[in-house]
Image 1 (cartoon, one colour):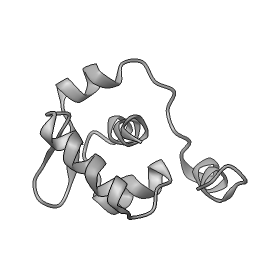
Image 2 (cartoon, one colour; image 1 turned 60 degrees about the vertical axis):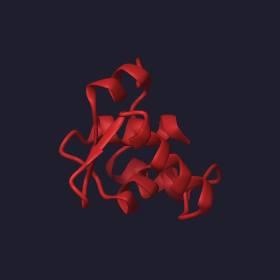
Image 3 (cartoon, rainbow, N blue to C red; image 1 turned 135 degrees about the horizontal axis):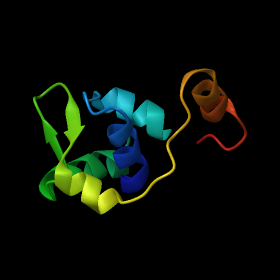
Length: 85
């Protein structure tokens, strides 16, 4: 879960809301998701201005190499396809 959220943030350095991160990472709002957001912050992997979360240099180091999540129509297919949560 952490990795998918960090990938979404790495692809959007301008920042995303928690709702947008959940959408890109394909997770519904839940206790485990809330705990993951708290861990990302506590570990210094993200920073926030109350509205948007951004990945930090430390978060990029933690993430390391990654395969980008799909965008545009491919993201929609990814989110609605058989592998979607």
